[in-house]
Image 1 (cartoon, helix red, strand yellow):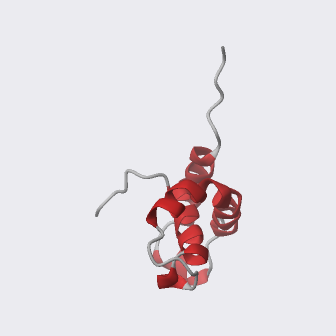
Image 2: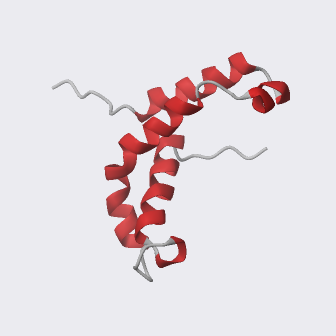
Length: 88
């Protein structure tokens, strides 16, 4: 199984940004990569909302695996989305 090096919240935020910006997904920009690269942080709150919704698996998801492991993984994704605090 592949494991992404990009945090899940960023990946979701990039998809949401691309969905709204790129002509390939309903937006109006034909070459949107640079705009998505700069805009995805604006979609991070929406991405975190999606992750919070996913904390509780539905019946089919729970039947496919361990709901406690699923919840722990989603909570780790949420925690990883919080900005790091820099102490000076």
